[in-house]
Image (cartoon, rainbow, N blue to C red; front, side):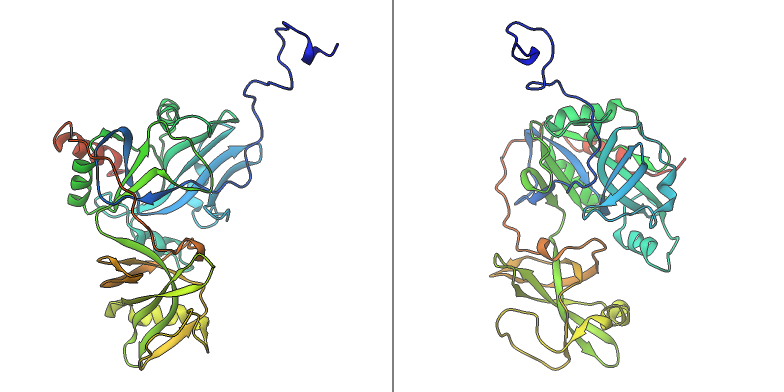
Length: 355
């Protein structure tokens, strides 16, 4: 009788193997949060800072250190400063690459300047903020709870020059978001303690709570003034059929007008990329729907952005991610404390100094 079928055998079998080490995945799409309707408190969640950077996976195996973006693109040439990161073989981390201002606050504008072809050295960084441990000693932790992965990450002691492991807060998401607003940061991410890591999904197990509304949109055109450059973006959402629907205009600040015009000029085309007609006005030019912009706004009414302002081009943007987000209802619990603990978590998470 084969050993795998022998009754009462104490030997492991191929039918029911223990968790065994294996090769790290070469491609893995990160798990992403959905939008919460507001900040909230919950004993079932852990609360972390939302980092104003680009998503990245950092791993080390026999082939060496790898840093890839959420689309699988190699980021090491863009952030050569991170080549010196030391990770145990068989480790795969999820996190974000950031560049900070003089107060240690992450700044997407400084990051984009650093990653541009004519790289700017303004700001401190780049740094990798590791907020999840997906593989440890070649063993997958995707089926472990968020709380367990977080404890393992903290226990590994991976913090070093160029790598930050941030703090988290229990229970009190509302006061945490208030403190985050004081520091002029982007927001908070709430993660269910018992949530598993499901690659490639946008899950309600992770909820982003923003200080002010923000959206990713496809740029389908511009409103251009011949004297000052781009005055506004013509923005679009992707619908369920993969078509681009009009989402309104986004104001372009005068100091960015010439830059936006120049950055988009090679994408100009003759026809509208939007589904269906909408009112035309002088100065409109069409763009091939390729570029993704980050906007600040005051809300969405019937699929159209209200008082939208252009912030930056999304370095790793994907058109398919540019959709109207339906906020998720959140639980309502009273806070367990004041602002002191949230303020300490923010201060201990931000990289105010660099060794």
